Image (cartoon, rainbow, N blue to C red):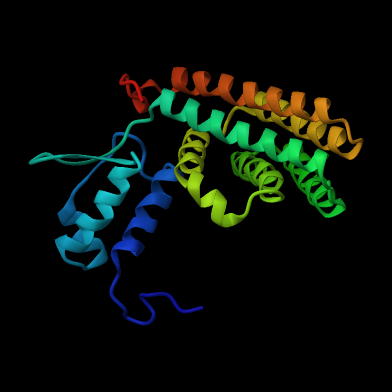
Length: 233
């Protein structure tokens, strides 16, 4: 597969946006890190106008902060913003499960969830930093798979920013083994309740997973206070 560099094509503002966004989500560009227009122009070999278009878009979704005459900063995490994003995603997942129980709960969905549960269980057997990161990624896909069963990709584009802020927070700390072990147990409970066609048990397990996720958010803030903003969302 050819890349832009292979074909010697210029980078667009969208390319730059995607590159910076990916680095912010993965924490390669940590909260509070300072960058400059000139550095970005040199890195991507584009004009300031192209960089500024990408920066403006990232600023709109609260990933960058621009300070006139002082440069650009990777936005600090806002715990209220992340909490509300998690709450929205949680509500959508519960609605998806409720809809499926009232209509059709497919065997294909249950099989996909079972496969991902096996993947997560195997990753927990060797809790390296890499495997824990993979677990968190699979955990996110697990819940998106439930949502995708009811809501189209086009519809989910409406909560694009929600998903970004959840992923960003989740990648700050991948070392909390006890938490991901608990998340796995709730994922297993969700699957078993759905496979047994027990709606209330499924909804309860989803809620417990959400509570664990939010509780861990506060632990991460305690471990990395320098990454968090004191401002309200």
